[in-house]
Length: 353
Image 1 (spheres, rainbow, N blue to C red):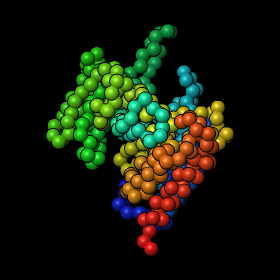
Image 2: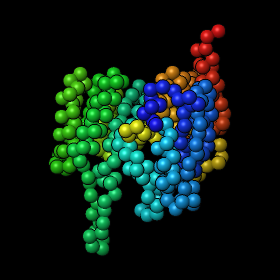
Image 3: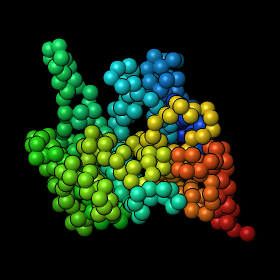
Image 4: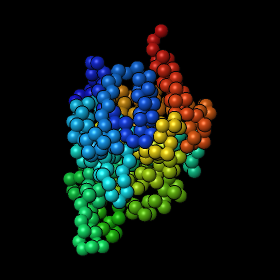
């Protein structure tokens, strides 16, 4: 169903699976639904459990019923879910990506006007392989006190993510793709990843291709993030580097994310569930709002996507309305109303008299 949505707007609107998540998830999701509604596009929001609420109802963080509903919808949007450290239930995010084969994790990192950060003019795209590497979760105790974890890198997955990165760069008129690796140490696993990237790069002569060791990349990013464009990475490196890049522009609260597969996509806030401020009307919905704009692009609604992004830029650049995490005092509701008002204005200005 999701592929059909990219060709024409379905009669009756889009069916969107909504995963509120944990902590502040329900609050930022409510804000996102309001902004999506302000675009004037008809949506049917279908709520399904994930995270702590799902465990209480179904015994696991990503129930089969939730996955089935997502498959029947045009797209899904997800709030943050918590994962215990060193024990407890498995990650809802990992389960979601595996079950739906959402092989590409896409994280645009873009400076926002008026958001305090160490850098200006940052414009990076992180393309992270989403299905294997150490996140395959293959580990076992060899003897007491010794654990082995398996790093799985395949030609199929590496080629697929490289092709996604180069296709994205081509479509969005990007100039450069950098493959990130540690092949100087992991010569077989990361060597295979690099060989796949090189084979794909030959097919895109208009795109500059280079390679950078992951630790050197991190150093170079904090020195001058503007020297990079599109980064393609294995799963673990991509997870770490994407959060590092978010720190370049103000933090995870202002950076969107998407998990994309063949005909399915889930758009999510990549920040944590922030249980300490849950229910207090203090959460910043910017990350999930920008993720919703990515969803609109994926649904082939570029005008609405542009309106949402413009509205967020207007609020940050021309008003003092800020939530506490970016130096303001506004509540979630106040910030959301300001964005909705701008989206509504853009929609009305575009309508013929």
